[in-house]
Image (cartoon, rainbow, N blue to C red; front, side, top):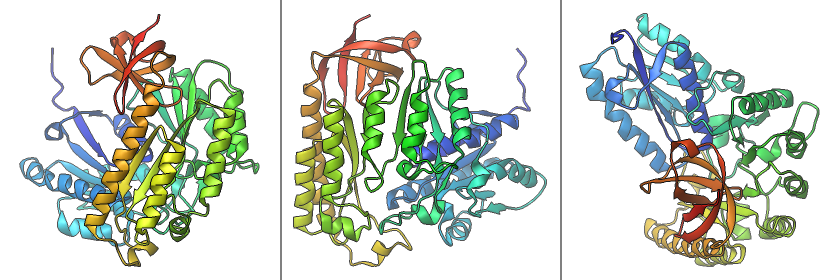
Amino acid sequence: MQVNSSQKYFNIITYGCQMNVHESEKLAGILYESGYLPCSEMEKADIIIFNTCCIRDNAEKKAESKIGMVKKLKKLKPSLIVAVCGCMVQQKGKADELISKFPFIDIVLGTSNSKMLKSAIEKINSGLKRFIDIELDSSKIENLPALRSDRTNAWLNIMYGCDNFCTYCIVPYVRGRERSRNKQEILCELYGLLEKGYKEITLLGQNVNSYKSEDGEGFDGLLSEISKINGKFRLRFMTSHPKDFNENIIDIMADSPNICNHIHLPLQSGSDKVLKDMNRKYNMEKYLSIIDYARKIIPDIGITTDIMVGFPTETEEDFEQTLNAVKTIKFSSAFTFVYSPRRFTAASKMEQIDEQTKRKRIIELVALQNKITAENNKKLIGKDMEVLTEDFSRYEGMVCGRTDCGRMVNFEGNQQDIGKFMSIGIEKVKTGSMFGKRRD
């Protein structure tokens, strides 16, 4: 077999949210159409792309540490192209800071500049020292090819940007203002994914509930259109915002066999005072009303959330209110994290809580939620649940997949099972996982 020595390869390292994961798929699609093939080893790659996140300080530090490791590779292989993309470089002054710190970076592209990747590579190969484009324009990331990382699940953007300006969040500054995609373009892309055999589609947006179509319909209108599509598939959506969430969404979910009985609804804090300081535009009464209605209409609905501890104005009393909210709501699971100041946000200018207090609170919160998750999972022992098999499990001889309500299940299986809907009887559980036996 003759080896093609002229073949070129790319390696993409992705940080952050599902939006970033899908944008990396678009970057990969551009490279694939340009003749590059993916590889998992940076040492083999002809172009390395860091698709970055800046939502928290740790995300930036991880990315910068990894970028620094490429310096040796660049010395050994001068033709190697190094690109840094995404949220981190979109921050004011950050691109110049990164170039000063890592002068071997060749390409810098912001959150809405993926379309320029092919042109940037061509210009670097033609002798240009460095290519930078960080102009915010979400139209530049639409209708791009995507080399999808999964054959079962697919991401689908319905909107870009954010208008909420939560006082702790940098997203509106690095992704720009909200702009919804054309409804017919979304439906066309959805039909295309289903025709290609994808079994689960996740609609993406910084706040999907504020989606507005060209004819003025909201997110519930889009969901209603999708609910009319025939065939066996699943639809999820994220992320929702409590201030825009309405009961009609739950009603549509309940009437549609294809829309998953699962909502991810960030709480952030159980204190009305802290929610106001965060500029979240809802209170606990509003949040609990959504939860109560959802469970009334869909009793077995899975509800997951995001919770932050250590916001600058959070007192011990406020934190106790968050713990009480978690005890009351009993989330299926929660993504918990410690507040870290983000440049240019209002909260970064407030007096900060000491790190020791933050650590104490996050440990207590995680322990509580782990206990609740385990208790919720134990209630499912003995039940049969439909699972969409997604991948091999980390447990030997097993595959894994999620239930309609978002819980992960491990069971004996092989490659032929991936991408199939299967009936699984739940036999035992751990804190974050369940184990079952196939019924077919």
